[in-house]
Amino acid sequence: MKIVVKIGTSTLAHATGQLNIRRVAELCRVLSDLKNAGHQIILVSSGAIGMGIGKLSLGERPADIPTKQAAASVGQCELMYTYNKEFGEYNHTVAQILLTALDLQDDIHRVNFENTLNRLLELGALPIINENDSVATEEIEIDNDTMGALVATAVGADLLVLLSDIDGLYTADPHKNPDAKLIHDVLELTPDVLALAGGKGSSLGTGGMATKLKAASIAGAAGIDMVIANGAAPHLLYDLLDGQPVGTRFYASKDKHNQEKSQDNG
Image (cartoon, rainbow, N blue to C red; front, top):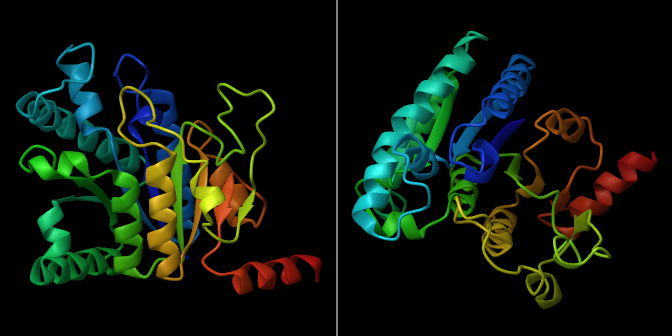
């Protein structure tokens, strides 16, 4: 399978903004193992600004654009150093691609990006994609959930996985309502489903459920299923690819869902 995995800042870092070393190490180990099994993996990683906040000891997410860009510049170095080191332990070569909104909107830029990405996969590299927050002010307003969906569409991925700080989509906010129940399957993004989005995510990140539902819409329109799963347990990716229910799965079509259910029952 060709799988795009997006991981958020709140999953990569502690509340202090410093790198969650144990979690990142496990994520890289699992992705390396999946790559060894023959899957093509593309990682869309948030975390540059969040890591820059920790590295610069800023204490909280800056409100002004120049400080965000400065934090991104520092954090991106830390992020790629870590990925290069961790994936290198399993003899996998990583490649960095930084994108801006213009790269995805401009036809020539987008084709160049797609060509580069597909060639990296052919060469056996593991592409790691992030927004180029250090130079493009408009990019800071674009979330990596959407980026993950656009990347999945560009490469014709089989699956998009959003690793977050929550198990999936719930019937209500599980932090406020103890009766909230996890929704395992979403066949259609109805108004009722969209109403479950709620607000922003953690203080370090920018994403929330609304951006994830937007990503599901983009992926679904391209015929790609999307799964929201808890990034605190990267080993769940094994279960997911083994066909077990993990998190919330957004089906690109009802027919696809019915076909998979039929196969499970058969």
